[in-house]
Image (cartoon, rainbow, N blue to C red):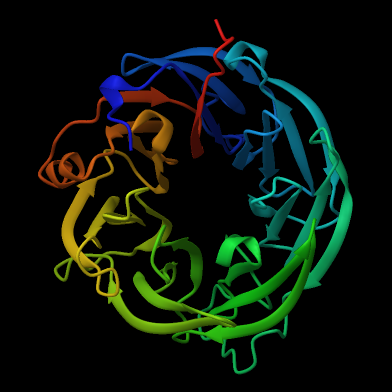
Length: 368
């Protein structure tokens, strides 16, 4: 991963929730685009989109695909030449509430939406120029996990929260918070998903997000409801859970809900965000990826870190504290992460209304 001091100019994208009617009406809000250069972010443009809480970048199409919390549609934002060029160009109604997460297939021919409230996993094909061609598959997740107990009061019938491509793009994994399960889908073509198997984890654990190892057959699962990290072996037909461990200190007795998880591009570090303890747990997976070794916790420097993730194009990682309207950007190298556990300050801080997702995009060589 490029050291941030040596990284070229980039576009930094930040999206979040709409503020409550009785809360502060801060700016920026919606989907904002910053120019990132010399470890500083300058706001260039904001699109007034509703609840843009997750997005994924297509380099092939120069398109940002956006999911909208509590809504029923996906959007496509063209960014041909840097942050000032960002423009909403397409949208599609997928007829399912709350696409909490959206993933792009490796061929950049389709996106997959995991609809948390609506309980469906939906594949949407893209046209040759990156616009939405239409829904190509739709699977109701309810009942897919045989033996699901739903012991937690927050768990409903089905709550798919993320979709992640593995095995060279032939398989898609979907964690389901309600059924304490990870569903495995085969992927046969643009937007074409077929359910094959489901693995049930600890009752009441609430798997929320998954991060694959970049080079080893392991995936890491962030379980929201019991504050656990599950390591699983990626098999030919799904997953085999290996071990579970806590994401919070033994002497912390407050309420906590795990949120985001990510693995560094070099496969050396794993990070998991804690909402309640308000921290990012850092694990060493360089020597033994099957047994993540806790290094410590980076203070989120804000309440409710819903998002934490690596930004490879600028050699950084970001933490978005949704309840404090702040995004902190840290040096993303392993040594810097380890130092941040001891209190190293972030390299930049951005203020954004209820931030929920952050992404860094390299500028094309023609950008000005």
